[in-house]
Length: 466
Image (cartoon, rainbow, N blue to C red; front, side, top):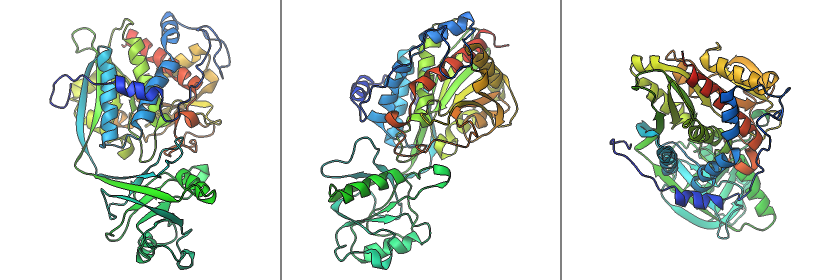
C-alpha cells in the first residue's frame, strides 16, 4: 500500500528491460555448485537439513543480479528522499507485490539534498557513475556547459590566463578554505567550480560530497569523488575532454520510505522473523555492494521462502535513509508498540554481502551490543551446516547499520557481511564511491553463499520460532 493506504501497482517491466542492457552491460558468471557440493572457501562439504537443501536448491545469484542491475544501472544512486530513491522503493514494492506479499511503503521525513551531475558533449565513460554533490551555497537548479581547465591545488599561480567562462577543476581543499579557493576562481570569471576529492586513509577512495562555503556564490560549486577526479584528468591529458556539462539540483522537503512486506502465519499476532537491508546509497555511488547486494538478497529470499511452510510470520524490511544515520529503521522501530517489538524473534540484517574485495574472506556476525542472540546463533549454526565454520567471525561488536536500531529496542538482531579477515572496519576501496558497481564490486559467489546462509538461518527460525 502507498502512504495513504491504497494498494499500488508498479511498472517494473520498463525498468527490467532497461536494466538488461544497462550501464555496465556485463554478464557475470553464475555460481556453479550442486546442493551437496563443498562451497568456495568452505573447509568441508555441507551437512544440510531438508530445509537447508530446499533453500540452497532454489536461491539464485543470477536472478538476484537482474534486480541489482535494475537498482544500480537503470535507477542508479538512491540518495535518501530523492527521485532515485523513490523509484527504487516503487520497484522493490512492485517485486514484493508481484510475489503476493502484503506490501506497504512507510514514509518519513529526511534532510534536504543537493546533487550535481557531470557530463560532456560526447558523454563521459559509462563504467563510472557521474553523480556528484552540489554546494547548497552555489547556484542550484542550473546547467552550465563550458570549456574545462585544471587549476591543480587552486593557488594564485595555478591559473592560466583564460579562466573566464570556463569550468575550473580544483583539488579538494583539505588545507585551504574552500570559500577562498572558490572565490579565487570566481574572481577570474569561472562559470563553475568542481572540487576534486583526495584519497582517504587506509586505501579508501573519497566519495562525492556537497562542499561547504561561507557565503552564497553565483555559480555552481560541486564536489566530485576521487574516482571521478582520476578519470577527468586522464581524459584532459589525452585531449579527449574539452567541455564539461555541470548540472545542479536542490531537493527540499524530502520524504523517504521504508519498504515493508510480510507473509502472515496464523491470525497475525504470533512470532515474526525479519530479514532486512537498506536500499539507499550515498551521493555519487550506484551502491551495488552497499547495499544493493543486501537488498537483492532480501528479494531473492522473498521468492524462495514464500512457498516453504512456516510457523511464524515472515517479514522483510528494506530501509530508506540508512546512509543518513539509520533514519528509516529508527523510524520503523519507534512506531512499533512494545507488543509488536516483542513478537520479533530475530532480525537478520544484510549490509554489503557480495564484495569482490580480495581480503574480504571472513563472514562477520556483527552485533551492536557485542553479545550473541537468536540471529547470530542461527547464522552461525547455518554456517556450520554449510561447511563454513572457519570462515565465520565470532560475534563482534559493531553498530553503524540498521540492526543497531533494533538492538537498542531490545530486539535480537545482527548485521551479516563479507569484510576483511582483519577487521569489519576494513572495507573495500570502492565503498561509497562511483566505483561501487556490479562489474567492479560484486562477487556472484559471495552473494550466493550469503543467500544460502541467511536463507537457511531464516527458514530454521521460521520453522522453530520458539
